[in-house]
Each structure stands twice: as C-alpha cells, then as structure tokens.
Length: 195
Image (cartoon, rainbow, N blue to C red):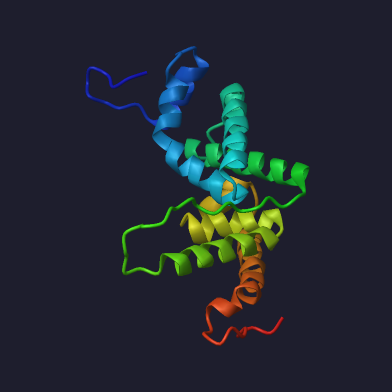
C-alpha cells in the first residue's frame, strides 16, 4: 500500500488491514516505518545485537502471522512493541545464561577527542551489566520508560499490565540499579546507597 492519489499516506492501522487483506507490501511498509524503535527496544532488552536480531525476527514473524487477530484496542505500534518485548522476554527466559558484552574494536592512532570515550564506554558497560542483574520484567519496564522514553501508560499497554505494575517495576528496578551503580556517582568509588 503506497501513498494514494489524494496524497494520503496510510495509517498504521490501514497498513495492517491491507496486509490482512493480502497486500504483499503493506506489512513491509509498516515495519520500515517503525523498525528503528523496535530494534532499539529489542537491543536494550537483550543487550546483545545477535540476540536482539533473533528476538526481533521472531517478533516480526509473530506479528506477520497474528495480524488478523489485532483488535485495535491499542495503537498498532503498541501492539508491535508488546510483541517485540514478549519475544525478548521469552528468549531471556529460555537462555537463562548471561551473555558477555563485547568491546568495540579500535586500533592505535585514533584521533584525540575531548570526550572521555573510555569513561563513557565503562559507564555504558556498567549500566548494561547492572540492567542484566534485574529480573526481565523490571528490565523491560526500565528500558521502555527510562531509556526509550515511553510514558507509564504506553509502557503498560505495551507490556499488557496495569500502570501501577509498571510504576512498581520501575521503582524496584531503579532502587536496585541505584545500589548496583552507586559507585558511578561518587569519585571515591563508595556507594551512596547502602545495599
């Protein structure tokens, strides 16, 4: 489904309906429209590009097949994000092992930069490792609300839980992260939050 003669670009719901009706390109158009955010959610949840790619592929296959069951009780993007998060959580539950975090390959002679790239990388690795310590449900809530910037209501709709559940998962996750990442706040390496 492409832009019509009237210049109207189809909505997500129209694309999904067209896919269900047999349009060979409608689902592809829908995925292209939202792939960056879907990928970001999968990557932040899985913490590994290969695992995130596998989870995203699983999710898109599920969405492709289940499009006919979409009841329009939420936005299409909410439905897609819920499928991606659930695919990630399913993979995490099946795996139950912690993957290692690969460091970027950089050779000698890199140009000087005023930023402390090693410090930023160390911080990113510490945050990634701390997120890995959270239960998957808390991690998913933190990723959606604090990292991706979704509202509590959007996150609740995405995960299919009550808003209060998102708030409590975020609160518990943030409290745990404060303990795990306390050394990042203090130059002397001590934690500000007692375990």
